[in-house]
Image (cartoon, rainbow, N blue to C red; front, top):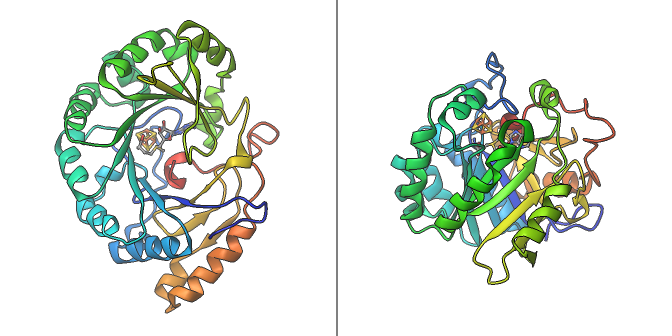
Length: 323
Ligand code: SAM
Ligand code: SF4
């Protein structure tokens, strides 16, 4: 088992397969952003699969592929297939902005992805264009329809809560998710990079109380949910999750670490503690040596982020960390 210095069990790896993206969400990647990693610093597929295997041997049982936008990485389905075959991996999931799901959803499902998280902050084409700088809502919605019929165990919709921008769409989003059996997840904007910081963050707490009352929601226990909290209708037919790093963090339940496309192990989304894996991968280290370094780094995983007390601390954007 991989246990950190605070006694938390780390069983979940978020792995970024690229820091590139075909959208420019205002809270993530500024339009002029071009500080991307150069391709010879990207882990190749053998290196990514090896890192996954080492983490699984250490006790990680769940892997989420993310980015940037994972579906822009060439031959992503081959990579998914390689990871999906690893013995000891209990759950393989993927986060996507959905623009390419029409093409990829069935292939991802048959290659081993069990669950999808799809970003969707608005159902308005005009607002989508304003927020992401791309006119692609129709692709995302069509992709979600394909995904829905592709046999995934679960599809979650990630909506970053920006009340002045999408607050009036909450009911429409709930209806959209209810009708399709999607879990809705509302997320407080985190101050990662200047663009996100400038947008500010609104607490989800008033909304949690309001939704609880309106829909008679009850607490839902979701195994391995980590720092997310879920409520569900009494018949469990609809669930809504709340990611509240700003208004009420659940860092004490954190069960995850992240690896960027260049092999940087980030121990906390909101701290700078890291370990560079690429020099070891390319420098002849054995699996055992890498595993030992990971174990030691995980012992240094910080107790919590400082998004509230030190909001300027994190200059890297979510897309480069692996959200
Ligand atoms: N491109 C994929 C997507 O959009 O789902 C995967 C990567 S994206 C970085 C992962 C998640 O991070 C998305 O749900 C996105 O909404 C969220 N995210 C990005 N920047 C954020 C921020 N500043 N605060 C909160 N969530 C953020
Ligand atoms: Fe791209 Fe996802 Fe960041 Fe939006 S949130 S810019 S889709 S990586």
